[in-house]
Length: 302
Image (cartoon, rainbow, N blue to C red):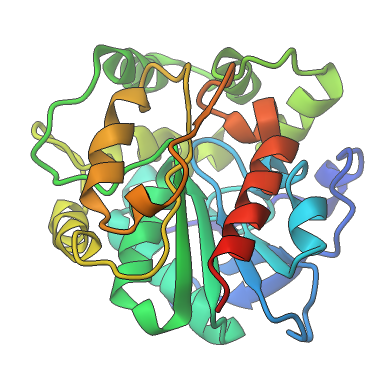
């Protein structure tokens, strides 16, 4: 087991994400440090937004949303183990669903987060939604975006298999290209370099290589027992939920209506698609999405 940290110098040129990195030590092999930003570390705000990213990004993905959310409350954005400024195992077998689930749960407990509005996308939802329903006393609202809480028994879209297969066979994983191809926005070289920054060496990408094939599904993956049980709890969720998907993501678009129909309170919120956005809707419409979330919070006071 090898655990490494990306040198802080790799993050010297990150645009529009000038927040002090903070760290929580996770009880896992090697005691990895999980990095995060916190716009109100004293916890004085009434509202708390917990923003969880997915594959193969890091907290930088939420930079367009943080300022608007921070006007309404505390914004906490962690980097998953293996991503961003968080420590990284260099072997794929060190990563499994339990690692990410336990790390997220420990992180929330360490910061003692309460009255949380969960904002989650991609793997941020596959991990975050089960954490939320299993720690419901800490969560006030859910905002799942381009994600799912899978049964572990469903077939995946052809586009997902194309993505997974590409990741498996690539000699060098082109992080920036993967993000650029899944965003409708024309991303600048500076932004694409920021997504590459956590991975200056190929062995640091082990977590990014493992996440795609880890998705719980009929023919594989990991964590299906946890996500399936959590899906049953989602069907009984009584607190507010706002399902907010992009209209142009070929992988997750088909899962939007089933998820919205699953969560009892989701139909109480506006039936909205984020137009002209793809998988990384935070890039394509971050400011718009943040305003929608603030309006949602205003509609559903604590």
